[in-house]
Image 1 (cartoon, chains in turn cyan, yellow):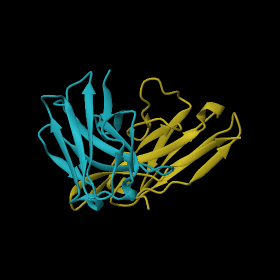
Image 2 (cartoon, rainbow over the protein chains, first blue to last red; image 1 turned 45 degrees about the vertical axis):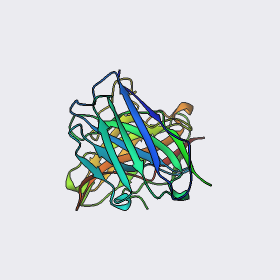
Image 3 (tube, rainbow over the protein chains, first blue to last red; image 1 turned 90 degrees about the horizontal axis):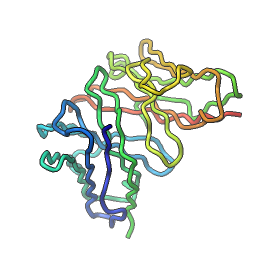
Length: 120
Length: 113
């Protein structure tokens, strides 16, 4: 059973950098899956941030390009999110998720989520 | 403003059937990308409910079904039960200049009366 677990600071100062890691267990990050970050502001809907493949290939949502970096660490079986120049609008629950290696690539496994608050 | 459009809320009485719509355009659902549905209870992560338009992962009851036509999709829940009260999200992919992006609907809150 694949499990994902997010970790990182729960509080980040405005203009600072948000850094989160997603540890993958029960499966290899080098398998044929894309690995994503999805966020959910309090009381709002889901927003996909971007994805990474074990080769290091990435895709990001255009509105965050220039601020976001998603990377993979195969030796630790984990992947990470880095978001710079954060503002209060980046306050959200951040989820890491796996995209299934089947037609349509649904998000079949999710982490429990971690709340990140941007505040001074 | 979500790329996929869902009604903010739907409601139904126990035992009834409800449907949740998900409207896209020619760059996402209409481009042939599959639609997936997720169920989310307060304070928990979304759970895959329906994949590839109308496939149920193991453990999902057959009271849940999906369909897709043209630029839209819908989720149907039959024999509504109190425990179905949750938020539901549709998800697909969208073709953009940077490649393929995952997109979600704004979510629909289901209330069981």
